[in-house]
Length: 438
Image 1: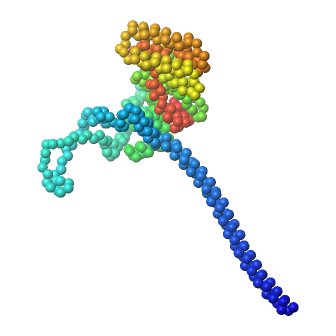
Image 2 (image 1 turned 30 degrees about the horizontal axis):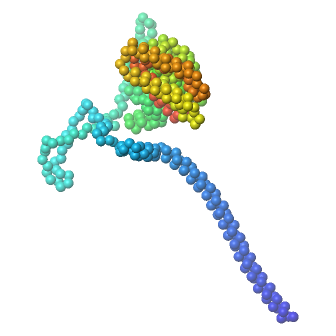
Image 3 (image 1 turned 90 degrees about the vertical axis):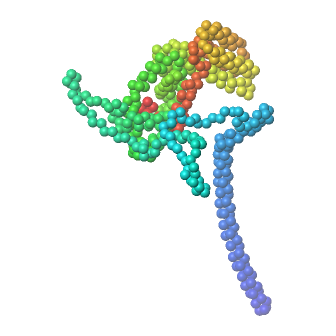
């Protein structure tokens, strides 16, 4: 019994040591398993993050692909057209090249020659064979420094008026410390090139060494508004007295509230005004006593103006084209769009001929009949009726250009003039105040 008991004690001790060893191994494996699970969870989160980032990169790639590789898609279509037409890519044989033309006036002439060969240093002789190369450049920055002028203005007394009077120096904006040439440059940078105030201050400091704050520029722009106010008013007289004026309008925001930017364009003048409404009162006020032909789109606010009007064919054709391209467009709208295109081509051809009032009046009668046929036709399709109603509203305003020389069939001049303002609105979101809009 003692021997058996001793063997049992030995076996128990062995099993106990084995159990302890196994427990240590199990605890170690459990700890490693816990670490691996945490690492797997971290990797899963990283995977999700990378997938989201990859999706964003794909979206950006698709966006920029349409911009960067647009020419390549055009190249593919050109290659397809090459198979049909046989015309190879690039400039054609005999095609006149286009490059920057040399300046007509030469301000300075320089002669260049070598005394020795730049390769072997052999002494060279002078020759009469030359080649010409013209370069346009700007003066060095050191030669373009600002000129600061101090005006001493006498404070004189008028015995008749019983008051003090003072001379105003020519070309000086009252109250402004910026000269007229510098102010003109700031106006061009701000409103023509659409540069922000910070960039304008940086340009003035970098190029001319003129330290000006953004607030000082804003104040100078306000002073320029007062100084140029009379010239702005004269533009209205030129607009009203012109034999041809284009008009267009687009949305604008002033401190987050809806307003409207209007433009009136003649062959010599472009005028902008920002108003709080798109109502007909604006063109009635701005074009009061106007004597020319108004070229405009189909906005109803112009219809009651007491002056001859030419409706824009580009707007009409675009609307009919969009209607004809719809998935379920009717055959009537397709045929109507083709009729309008043919009518426009004939009109453009007739307007290209020398102006003869008698012939134009005869043509005016024929085109009036053509338009009336479209208005009187019994269309059944909704899309064709919609374009027909647009033509009915415009009527003979579509052919007014026949009766006046130099009047176009489209309002593209106003569309192009207002485009920079649309870009400015897209960048800035509009104006922060009524004064800024003015």
